[in-house]
Figure 1 (cartoon, rainbow, N blue to C red):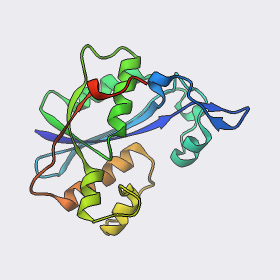
Figure 2 (figure 1 turned 180 degrees about the vertical axis):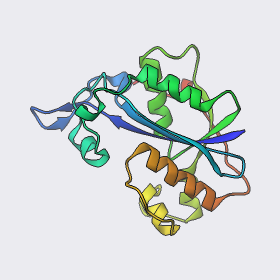
Figure 3 (figure 1 turned 90 degrees about the horizontal axis):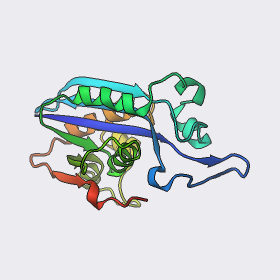
Figure 4 (figure 1 turned 30 degrees about the vertical axis):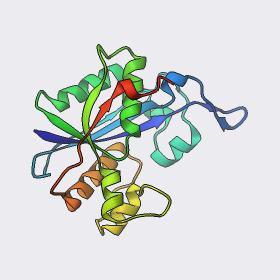
Length: 201
């Protein structure tokens, strides 16, 4: 059994003429442009990692805010693999062994489902076992300033070294893995993501 610490970066539609975010495709508002993941063994040691950039297909122009925080440009991504190929590479990384996803909030799993659904890559409902590391860190640090704690704030409060930029899928997955290892709870709050409970739009 292994833990898969997963992080995703997304692009979304933007009306450049009117300078505002728009909802162009309700069923897939956030298009995945990067998959970063770290595989941990049962003792939370890193045993593998993967970083996949993805060529945008739905929103080919980068949302200005997304480009600013991720540093990813349409020009950089134009020669990267499409989502269907990228996800198959990710599945190879996952392997056949049993695994539990570790994520920072539940938003990434919802976006993953919607992307897979949009491209008709699901033969049945998507059901995944996962641990919400953000929720775990919020409780561990007794953080109460406006809801759930942010990744950078958690890193700083836990006094973990900041060596790479945030808002990079692999870097954020690595940071999340370090938080998971630091907290190292005796009892894990395992949840189940079931796509039946996700709104189509």
